[in-house]
Image 1 (cartoon, rainbow, N blue to C red):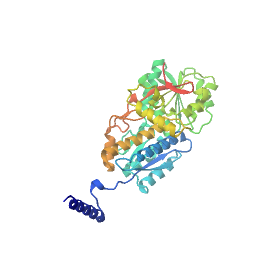
Image 2: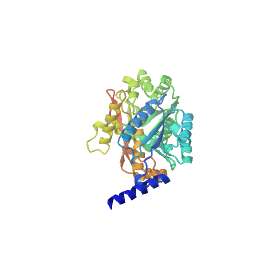
Image 3: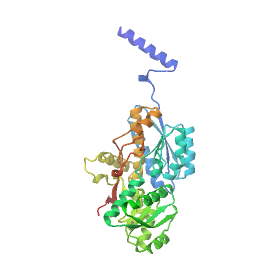
Image 4: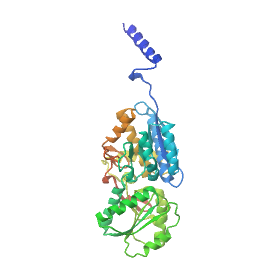
Length: 387
């Protein structure tokens, strides 16, 4: 009887397969195409390089373990070189030709804003690795981002200034989407902390010498500190120019400073820079029971073991979080794109490198101000800032 039943089941399954359909339990797993638009080369390669390497490392590990619910990931990385026009072209290509399930990136805010409407109209899930708050404010149904909010970064900086008795400052920013967005938040929030911006200067993102700007600001003896908002190597150039001029007021940087290569570019002049960042850069200093500790240390070890010539950065962490969020949503909702979008929007308590994510229909970033720690540069390394 058992032999007969087995034969009947075999015949039924064979018929189903020949007829072009299969029971769900034996349906063939399909690869999930994930696109990524990253600045792997060019002036923003300090962002896109770690992001691309992180995704490649994670996909390799996920696929080696059988994929997501049996579905392996096909990763398609497009190198935009931080060029917004290339980002637009690649977004359309990934959507129309490659027919990807979701897109991770771009690396920069300017690129992300250029493709925000494109992905929204195509109903394509986008998990941006860029930081500007305008990416998710106002909320767009299919657009999410993993770096912390500009406004929270500003609040952490101004809170530290308040503790130090600093009330009069100068603001410098690069002429990028990130720089412009940060400048806007610095100006908007300043009155809440009793901060007066005495001077504001915007420099070209390709600048190689900011000594003229420094000289101009130094002429105002009332300036007590400088805030620089950029992601470009000019962060290190500014620090050098300030110290060369003998201007020893505190230099604050944005959360775009979270790559040790920026410290190396600044050399001795980078010593003492103060900035907000996620806890990845000080992972080993966290208490053992911290909700991010295990994840951060694993990512740090995995990354620096696989890429011994590169140190872990918060930027690679943004890509780590993007794929982690996507995987968690697919594990929960399957491969129905709309259900996955809904799952992302309702993910809560998910630990990432930037913090613990709690998304909602009103919040497509999911991080609060506690995701930031104030850090400084001490002996050429990142350390927790202490007054």
